[in-house]
Image 1 (cartoon, rainbow, N blue to C red):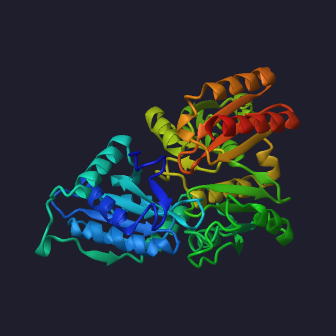
Image 2 (cartoon, one colour):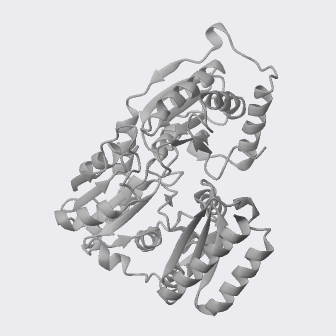
Length: 452
């Protein structure tokens, strides 16, 4: 049986792959492993539980809370809030661990369970392995120590979480946003209240789209994975910029005043220079992944900033940041981690900091983002293939070698299985857009042939 935990928690189609029984069992297992990783010694373990607005989150949250309380854990339910809000509150409330129910940018039928250790930090692989082992032990019927009477956990609604998190976001801004007009696209997701409120409190004039969640429309035509609505809204409203988060608001992409995209690489470049100027970019280094555009690497070199690259996934970026003592890292997809203010990617915080740079400099986002030139990059997702065989297929290895020969030193190829979806991602970068498209299409066909 494959590993339950992927690159970002346990995910699947809610009530099919991820059932109420699994959610309850994982929560009991997590309680046995994570109780005591934070909080005060001598008191009953405490967990913070939040969710995005998916309909399935309602029954999954009930199962998680039941599992935790049955294992003797007190629960603070914070309701619908972004993933980074749950991470923040886990730390600020001195909880032993946190639980977030979300499938991030995935379609509505999916859902997921993500655990945070004490302090709001993502779990190390070793902790996930221990939770998984405990889950299977319990599923096999092995006994565990069930508290009774006064030993069971108590459940509390923590309505103050919204205001506490928004106050945190606004409080860390280096510059207010007075005079800026900003369009905020909340993906009908977890930041539908948080993001507009934070931008408003920071002084911006806010136009909100994609902020009417009904449990079924999360990520549907709005948000960072569907930027078309934001591209149209910003110039239509005469706004200075627009920001779009995803369903659980741990990532952010932007558009400038003309409606042109500003991706995660460009956001990292803008924030990196701002943080160096402020003296907060530790070791003058930005951490990014191998998916970053070559133009980003060239810009960092030109501006005198160092670049550390990791495997794809914000958890690997975060690990490298902690290992090297760096303060800024992220992904092209918009996961941006500012470690002085957050323990995970935070889309609303990223958008606020980007807008603050525009306000502080008086320069339009178009000009700020122009610090780097994006080389043509084509990404094709190939579904319905055996993603586990990417590294083992000789046919695919030969196709990659031929593609690299065609590109020479002017481009690069990256093939990787998705950690959150059943597909293989093909990325090709080249100096010429037509060549990038042709090589990527050929490799996508090779993936289907070799792994289909």
